[in-house]
Length: 356
Image 1 (cartoon, helix red, strand yellow):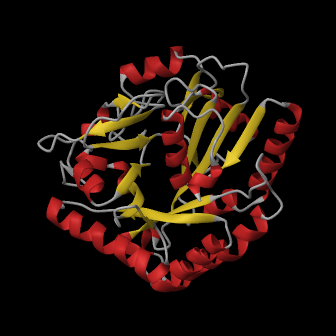
Image 2 (cartoon, one colour):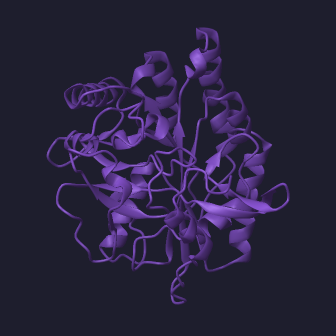
């Protein structure tokens, strides 16, 4: 159904909101990040299938990405959100090898259920230490804290599912922030009931430790604005209405901003996501397009490593050649968060050196 997982308020937003007007004095810049819930053990796969999944990425990703460059001459990037509960050194080593080739970065993914804040804290600190010390992933900030991006398994950030399944921690946002999370990339969650009222936004969520789903609403990121104290940055991917794909030829479907099943990469979807207007308020010329996927699922790997993705990158380059005021930038999740902060500081041109 059209409204599955969306509140009436969110649906009105989708129908009536228009893209913010551009400043004609500056180019339109689109920052594009693919955030992969990278799960080799998906659906209890055998060890043989797990290895086949990882090996397919290890050989296929460089072959796919090598020919393409964005407006800055950079290859496509892939952010591997690796699940703590599926850790296996040999798999991480191959993913890290891809990252060492300049094709992406590793971040943190977690599935849990009926958890406690104390156990969650221990789990996150242990896993981020392991990723940093054993695999050279993640970075330390000036204080020495390891920083990481996060995606919640089953979409249930901050115990947001109505039945309380697949989390259990009402103060999860505080735990994430206190253990070094620089931003959350879970959303959108629709059609899951864990979807927030807030959509198509970059904003800051402040935890209410006594209630679930504290990120349902928050304070929008804006140029010149100081984030609220003790808040966590939320970077949502765009939700949009696909008027060309209709149920029984009548009701348009929601585009849930994923590469999955029959929904692959295309220039049409990309431009629709750009028009969704995920921005830092006050900087309309910087559009943020975060896409999610489950890259180890065989059908999705076909999409992500196949001819359709190759055609998408070719079409994107052609579109940029045809539109001189359009720039597109392949970025990791971490770089996307850094660009959010640059926009908040009033930047007009991205400072790539500060993201290195």
